[in-house]
Amino acid sequence: MNILTLSIKQKFFDEILAGKKKQEFREIRPNSQKKYCELDEEGYVKEVDGVLQPRKYDAIKFLTGEYKGTRPYAIVEVTGAKIELFEDENHELITYQYQGEEYVAAQVVYDLGKVIERNV
Image (cartoon, rainbow, N blue to C red):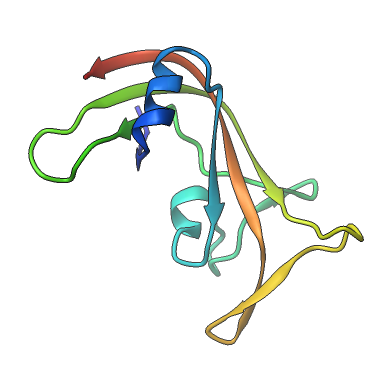
């Protein structure tokens, strides 16, 4: 099973366990691209029929609380994922510069299913 590990605030952790929070959003930055996106040999995000491909995960392990000691966690099924590109009010893609390269602002959206395991 391919599991992504993410830290999350207690409020959102509780909402996931209660079944109220059905999606998790994470901004894709140059330093997190490998974690959230399928990359080709040159390090670019793979596209299939013009659609950017998120990295495939079976579940997300959400951790909350302080970093010392045992932290509460929940492992939650991922039922789907997609990459969304950010646009301005004129529907133009929002871009930014990082270390001399231009990037498009984007986020990955994970659809959450059932809670597989919890330790709270």
